[in-house]
Image (cartoon, rainbow, N blue to C red):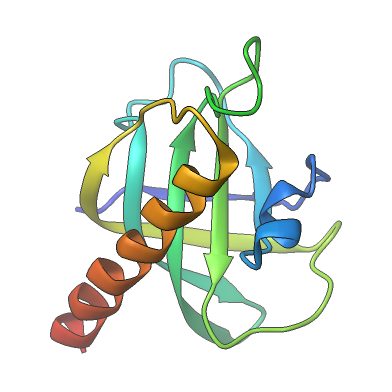
Length: 125
């Protein structure tokens, strides 16, 4: 069974938005038994299901003392999700969490992650 996390979308640092990958953020407990890193995901918002890039971790590139969070970038979505309840299903682990020496390198990796996740989502149907 795939990990499922549900919760209300909270505010973040909005770095994803500045990089062209706005995210919906959920606070998660430190002891949640989900591996930190990048995931292919599906997100339910109301009655609509979206493919998504998921990230679980502490954001070591941008927040040295960060809390563990779940961030999801919903594909083919535009709008404001703050305060809304969403349901995130983590489908497949893509790569481990790591620190990048610049936001430019982080963005290059996110672009590669998106391509890998699109292939995974296409094969999942």
